[in-house]
Length: 120
Image (cartoon, rainbow, N blue to C red; front, top):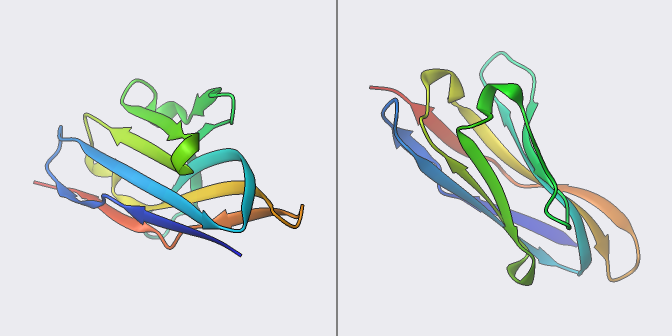
């Protein structure tokens, strides 16, 4: 019913920048929160940043001041601008959206993930 497609991952040197995008499509009536998670090898998935429909944001302490989350409600898209990247930011990044469908069902949907590798 709802699909999330991420893009923008890749290989970048330490100190570099990347911008991730995640577009939601399908039977969407409204999107509540949109967020980014990441999972590094051998570690649990962790919340990186979250943004509400009213643009309230929250960040993991490890990315505060370096990452910025934003959303375009008209495009059902969320972005993650990542600056001053560090090797420890290397992970698969996943997009999540809490959605109300046209059938008035609330769903938590996930994207397929995009790899971010920070290495020299």
